[in-house]
Image 1 (spheres, rainbow, N blue to C red):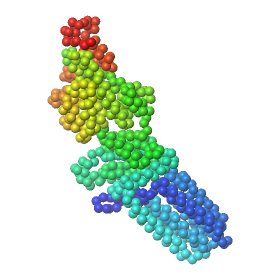
Image 2: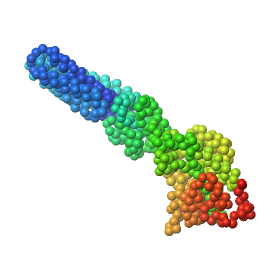
Image 3: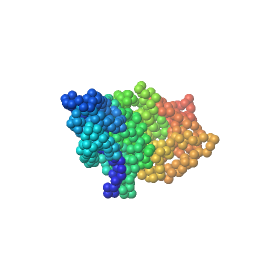
Image 4: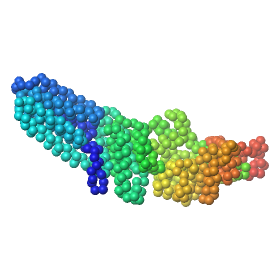
Length: 616
């Protein structure tokens, strides 16, 4: 039944007859009715006396019922929902044939009781309108067939009436019991109903070997809707989302309101990637942002384990900035397995790209950015961004971040020991997921203590679009780190979620201008106006600015003219291992890129005159 009925200030929409209307339960119940009717029909046909009617025809009808029932029990769970209407209608016809052709009249009247099977089946699984159609069909044939046995016209009233009464009572009781599995606001399954459907789906997947995916979706910032617009507006949003998403799903895909503003989606015979694609389609269909966690079932796993894993993915999606989907897979990709081994064995490389001062002729190294480098045999073309994404999806990011930070601090300390006159800062990227962990600031402090790298020479780069500004833990970590001397840089500034209001709320010391703005500096066109705005903004907010992606002398000159003090890019240097960087800095007397001192003129007096005294 699908309708709208008033209940206080909400609407109750029942999208299905009951929570029992699953492929498994329908197949077992209808198949059992068929088998029972077929066996009883064969037995009574064999033992009943009389020579009226057509005994072979009745036996054939019973045999057909037995065969059809067996097919339902074996293959029914994989059949389309609509096929059950054909089975129920055919059962009505077979009963009518048996009543009409049974060898004696008493047996024919007895067989008319089988119409009750039809009533029960229709009332259990079909909407009221569909169930009523099956009941009316069964009652009509009952009223028509019994008088053909030389019985009075009213002889069919009692079996037809019993069929009607049983159907109505079963339908009412089924729907009353099913209310415990239905969310009254949206008409979807509630948590209890979804858990039942999930357990049934796992049973089917265990037998059939088909895949099974689960998605948990949570509406972002839903509490603000309730707080600012009221609960009635919040209820309207939930109803609209439920209605919209329900139209995008196939009959075997089960959507549930799992609690509050959380929805659960059960996807039989679906891969993880297909589930992610469907989740993106659901997100695009509504105006309300939503975060989602996706996972898939593996043989032997329980429903609670599956839900827990999807919930981890949902939590990680929220912590990573909301309005996104995170896969929490039970099956690690070969790349993830290889990355895990590389982390455990310390087989990852960290290279360093200099950050230079644009003043004093440019090229003077004042800092380095640590960049992860690793070549995968499982996926040779994987980018650093793809590698980080895999690390986040497979819960490797914490170990990866710690390895890079520890290695970078140790290498930076080596640089500092080699060149006494260098006062380099070390820039290291941090994952938004890691920053949202409660113990992150303490882990950083422990690494600094063990490597000896000063906190005031460490810069942690945070990509703003990956930082959940609503996360109190992330903001608290930023404040704690700054209180301890660590500086915070907002990476890729000028893209994504960057805004003046967020600059006022995010603890930060440095802006790194996205390289797309620098790439727009060409000799045949004016410099992008936004660069001048960023330069003025940084001055007003007392923030340092680093221009990324400088590739030409012209770009460096324009940035210097605009007032930018720091830059990095291929124009000065690519990223190198620490040993190669030491060599470059030594040969260039602390400078990199075009315009470094003539290496042929280097000698101790030249070094001393420039204040450059490499140690050892």
